Image (cartoon, rainbow, N blue to C red):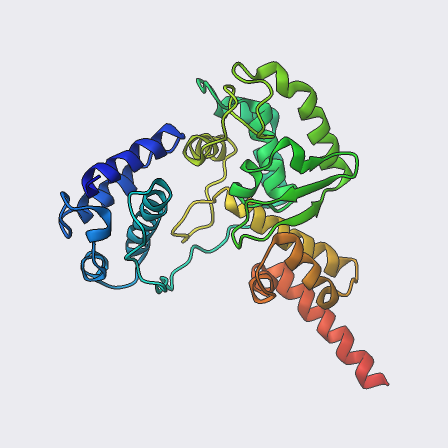
Length: 314
């Protein structure tokens, strides 16, 4: 199979699984200007890839890498290619969106059932109950979107209130205990879940569309954009980005740290616990949350002053 046909098959496959995939599709078609579309996938050279990726390290370049990486993973799995011509290591853009930390009042509006139902007006596949449970998993358990939508029925153990997270960023499974309020919400969802499935009601995904398939990020993102507007959450003045679903996970981490400081807990001792809970590859990824809000900085400063005073009085 030639390169053009293989790429078109990949686009069709991604779109059949719920992704709009417009940006990646256009980037893949642009790549065909740098390679021979009539040749096989293994004929693509590293020099052709380098020509396509040439330029500064920006989010646009990262989108190119993402599109090509996904395609070659698909091509190799289908037997269209035997290896990938992409560089083993790819520099990343220095710019990263600043996390938006939702206030408790904003979270109440985001999780309000009436607001959620209004955000889904006209939606055919995503139900209000499923959308709300997804948001609760992102904030209440600190899961990534892919982790929450990848949960199967077997991964949700309500008898012990533990989630088994397998579809992780760093390919490491982990156990995530959930609190009593979230556990109750998950149990309630299980009772209503079969009533809304129009397809395979035994669908393996814990969170699914009405037809029983895995939730697509594009579908949920549209609903979240509407929900954010209905809830009146537009971000801080001067921000380049609007609040994202992923910021619910960031908010979980910051609110956990804030509660520990207020409760006079040993945050340094608990930090590795939070790191494991969030599925970070190392502690550095968790430490960044310590400086994300003025309140956390104030709490940390206050704790240091108390520590210093004790040391001076010894």
